[in-house]
Length: 115
Length: 113
Image (cartoon, rainbow over all chains, first blue to last red; front, side, top):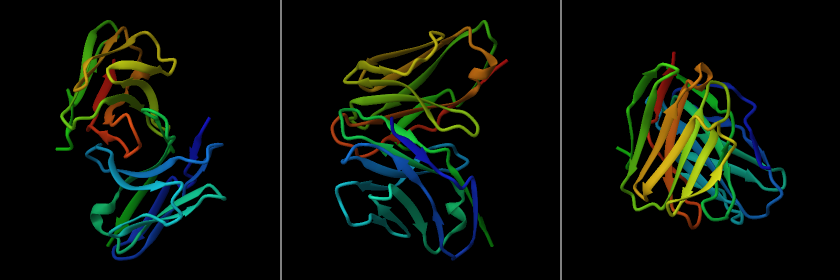
C-alpha cells in the first residue's frame, strides 16, 4: 500500500520569504502522480500543483514549485515570496494511474505566515 | 465556488437520528468520492463511485450508506452514528481516466452528540 509522510506538523515563514515543505512517499509503482493541496480555514481543498512521475522536470505554478526526487521518493513544495494568503494546511498526496485512482494523503503541514 | 457543492455546511445530530449529506458537481466529472477528515489524522477515503458504480468501500461501518443516483450527485446517508464519527466529511470529483487531481467541496462539519 502507498503511504505519504509529512514530517513537519507546523512551519512558519515571514512574508516575502521562501519556505519549503517536505513530503516523502512509498510506492512500488513506477508511474504515478503527486500533488500538493492547500486547505485554508474555509476548509476547501485547493489543488496547488501536480507532478507526473514520468516527467523529470519539476512542476512550477507561479510562486509554487516542487523538488521531485524520484529515486529518493521525495516531493517537497517551495513557496517563494510568501504572502499572508498562503497561510493554510498543506497536504501532500499520491495517486496511482489506474481508473478512478484514489488519492492517499499525508497528515498535513500547517503553514503560518508572519509579518 | 469550486464546482463541487456540499450541503449542509454544518450538521449536529443525535446518535439515534437519520440524516443525509449531499454533494453535487457540474464539472462533467464521472467519478465521485467521500473522504473523512479527523483532527491530526490523514484524510480517510470512504467510498469511490466511478461511472455511478461503487468501486471501493474501505471497510466503512454500515451506519454510513452512500448513494450515487447519477454522475452529478452523491449522498452519504447517516444513521445511529457514534460520537467518534464527528469529523469533516469532504466530497470530491474527478475524471475517471487519467489523474488531473480531484476537485473538492468545502465539506460538511458533522458533530454527533
